[in-house]
Length: 301
Image (cartoon, rainbow, N blue to C red):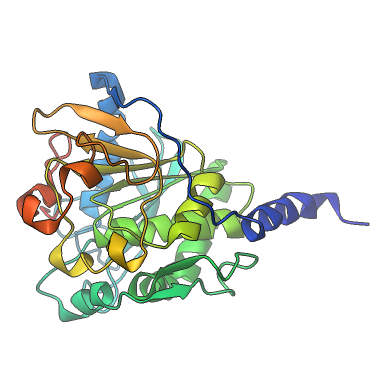
């Protein structure tokens, strides 16, 4: 007889293994977000930007500082071979926050992570039960694996000490890619956790099966925000549609008018959304990639 305690785990694993490779073609109406809806994302923009700031061994940030009341549980990375990251608890959100640094173009190791763009299956020891048809950007997957055990332990500790099952992963650019993988990893490893992802300037992370898996695992819980004519950092451009990479659903696009619109479905082709508005890199603007995102410019500590 299967233990009742194992049922949530087995249910999740079964759903991951049986994820359909067919495209998700939800094309609902594009809607404009209200000021109140936009403001919900502002704290996460600050957390994503703080990911760029160097953590010290005393769990404080040497540039920019951290949000008042925020309780760090783990920090790490060197900003070069391993992107800076942190895990902590935010009392005002009653949630555990995980964030990674985005690409620093001056650090060759981070550049090489972006350039290692072949599609490969997820690490089965980190993502047990996930079908081998689910493939991700090799550089992103390898980088996420280097910090995964530390992040998992810190998230579990923070959840236990503060009595919450709410976890949000966030980041910008490369940091968003790593945090999207973290979201899936944490949901696989802690099925009872309520995990959501809010990313900024997210490059495409995986193939169609990966995008479908994200959509089915996190219905309504994934948001990736793109600013105007933003194109990813040039070293992230390798994860393009022509190579088989697909964005999951959940895009919010900041238009030239500064209005925010919600774009249903995967890689929505409307000109109100990023895929339609920036069909190739020559139509994009690199400076838009860093924001601002409701007043927050990324990479500024």
